Length: 358
Image 1 (tube, rainbow, N blue to C red):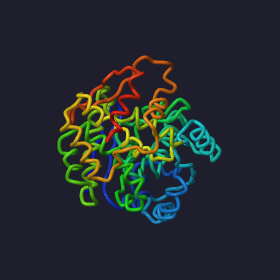
Image 2 (cartoon, rainbow, N blue to C red; image 1 turned 120 degrees about the vertical axis):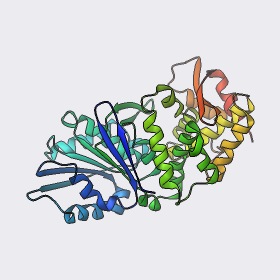
Image 3 (cartoon, rainbow, N blue to C red; image 1 turned 180 degrees about the vertical axis):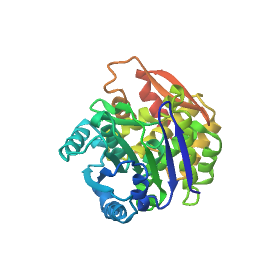
Image 4 (cartoon, rainbow, N blue to C red; image 1 turned 90 degrees about the vertical axis):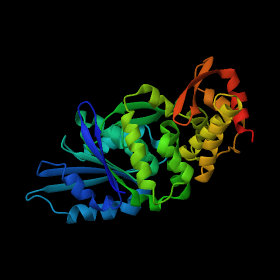
């Protein structure tokens, strides 16, 4: 069912709208935010999304009713949507293009695309002219779940994923679930994995939705519940750390694949390996481990990694950690109850091996 989720922060409030058909109303939604007769919009997207929606969006801007005297200026900026492009080079290039086009502090940066587009555009909006308006139009499940609530934009560094970040709230988020119909299977499941990780941390009805199975009939409700949960815990450091479930192993798998394995699917493999190891090593009950693995299987999420060895994964996970003696892993001791477990770095390969054994 369509939903509006109100996000309230210390000095800024905004609405996340979740329903079908929002891309076709994009012009109207953005113009409603504007109180000036000169409307400037820098539309950030990638080539794939551009081919699907850009002409439709521009036609919508041209046809939608406007206040008398409104001067509308729209410029499109394309960036690479690959995970390796979510960095300062991309943001710098974007800022240079926005500046070269002569956009003022009244510009609205509209990000139409997946997580890379939303993160990079969010970072640029926070930097340009000391901060300009930002509208997010996430087109993937992962971006709808992760980028919508919390007001964070994150970039990758050479040392690892999401190591650079800033807090910057959008003025509006539009989650058009009709966009999910155009996603390739891997990208759909990758995003579903991000929602599933949220469900393990949240527990309750969100996790039971996965146990019953996610389909087109309940995907809007799933996104709504995930967004609400992430908004509720945005200031809770412990819960934010819990959302890194599966990331130690998953990030290593993603890096080893040169990010050819979708981020969410690598994370899913990391979750399965970590959860299976936790059950076998007594860090959680076998029932908890089995429920998580069964829910993943129910929703066609990967529960094994056959591409890399425990030795390769552990070495990748420990890279750039400066010979740390311990490493922190998020463990789901129960559904809805996750915590940090510190393990010796030289034990990591054995733990991964235990988690990979079927």
